[in-house]
Length: 381
Image (cartoon, rainbow, N blue to C red; front, side, top):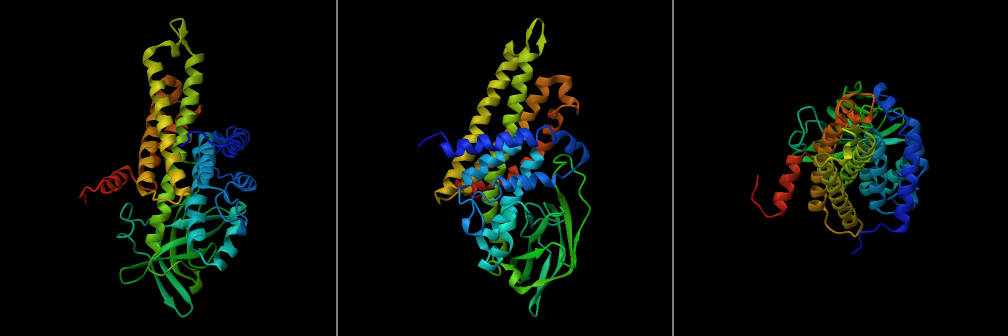
């Protein structure tokens, strides 16, 4: 057992951090104010190999491990959570299902451009009346008409679904009695309606839309994986995504600690730096412990996945702890900064707004506690 990253992982971290500090940090506040989605940054992340890092070289991937993906998401998320979730959703929800369950023809058609960051993919699961009960709340239907699926229904809160480079959206739909399947819908297909972007509390520079399917027709061969296994496929994908959201949360905790340390050493009160006060110093010590714990939980879950071992419990633990620690970290940072933390002129307010969704997306804290409880053998319902 080792708690040190190898030289390759450390080099990746250094590369991504340098990129993020150069390309993202100076612009993140303006993107947030303008609700601007920077397509050029996606292209540049593709050029660095971040989107295809953990996938087959046959289709242009990097052939690396999942820990590499988590390190990249952490560093991008440290610079800006909007760009962090863009990368996380592009890989975990967009690419992952096609890479894991697609046919060779589907992979050859979609993956090279997705790996290269020339295009983005999305996954449509949640519906207007749904949430944690995604399977039971599914109302979208797909009927096989000859050699085409005819899809009708709607989806909510879909990340990367309406950008100018979105190429494909995989959607879950009822395809028979007690049967949910996943179907690939190319962007621009007649009958696919992308609703206006949401006005969100945070993640202002990420892309999130509702989708409507109105007699949307796609070829029968666009079925992803086995018919009737769509929701089960997504549950497997979700475990990976929970680890990745853990990494995104770690990036935010690191950003909060960095800024709190810098400010507390420079700001003076009563003739000395405020960092000299135990009341503040102890908060930062606790934040450092939370950062280390969140990072270790996340990296352990990623290492288990890379070893081919079960990850459901580890993924739930990592996402639960790291996301809640990230929300707490933004409160600590805002308190350390005082009045300046309440002003939009600095990043603390943006961090605070961005944090809350981490406890909700890809499994709420309540659902994760349910998963963990069941893993302990408890008869919870």
